[in-house]
Amino acid sequence: MTNFEWGSKINILPYGMLYLVSALFLGTAVIFQPVIAVAAVLLILLLVASLSRPELISYFVLLTTAVSINFLFSGSMFGIEILSLYKLVILMLLVPCILVNGLKFRLSPPLWAMLALILLTFSFSIWLPEMSASIAVKAFIGLSLPFVLLLINWKKEVAEKQIRIITLLPLVSMLLGVVLQAANLHSLVAVEFTGAVRVQGANIPPHLAMLAFMGVAIAFIEIKRSPQYIRFNYIMLGLNFFILVITGTRGPILALVLMVLYYFYDISRAFLKGKKKFLIPLLCSLLVITSAVYMQLDNIKKRSFERTTETGIDLSGRAEAWEYFLNKAADSPYAGRGLGAVTVANDGTLYGGFVVPHNEYIRFYYDGGYIGAILLLLSLLAVFILVYRVLLPAVKPYYLLFIAAFLIYSFTDNTLSTVQFIIPFCWYLNCLYRSSQLADSPQKEVIR
Image (cartoon, rainbow, N blue to C red):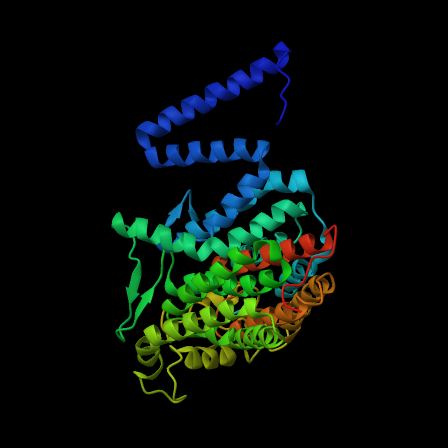
């Protein structure tokens, strides 16, 4: 608990004035701007809680990623667009966590890469007329913030809880989606023009799919790493995979194929060695996958083959978008067009949903050219290697396949620039690193 000194009259006056001014502000706001008043009260309560129990605030911040706030509340507040304001509030709430736990810069390479990108932007990038300094600074702050999550030195027990919360995010989104549907604020499902029905929870389908992707991949890893929570992780594996499939999002499902195949190989090998206890997980896994794919077969056909395209498979406009962004970046291949330039590149030629190209390699090639894109990729690989080195041998294959799935997924979606992916992703890498590094004793392998 924070201990304030109240014994001196010198201290009493400033605090009294502070409370008086706060009361006047809130009283006035209730009359003229009740929404702002409610938001202010909630923020004050959160800040007070963050001073006494900062780990509780970290759990709350994680849970907020279960909601696509910018799709539920459009527009801006206090002159700041909702998504930027959300990121700013996250940073404010995590400050007490940083003060209590401290920062460790071992996993900081992506932040240095982002700094190099912003310097490259103001020195060698060739700007388009639509580009501006404010766009570059805004992009730098927005893209760098999730990488700060790699630095917080969480205690082991807190990190373990945070890992379990990340696997729960898809289910939280679904439950909130039911509540929002009942309140007529947001539909639980989305129906596309092709007729495909996609579950979205409290998000949009691609964002819920990102949460579910993380939930599935983490459950695979944690089954091997944390045998004490094996039942919980098996349950979350099944639920998250089912949620992923009913979102109708193809990219993350394809990205996880290698991980799923290795899991079946691993568990089948254990069963064939005489460990009969793995028969139930094996049969249940087959049942979940078969049922989920059967239920979504019609949706997959509608989304992939309803429209005739040059590629043969409907990529939802991605092929055209990739070609468009690559062509516009051709005049500045080494230093790119400047950080954030991709957000103003669509001149109306493409569908409005392509604010960015849905391919992170093209996105950072467009913004930073070969130099910026390679620097960022190398910085991420440095983090991946650092985490890999502290893992137990049995966990390493699943972790490598998780990273491979992330790299594959990044070909078809905005993994580094979407809150519902990059925040849980960076948070998990940090927790995995801290928890594995601080392990007091070797953990037993689940499957030998």
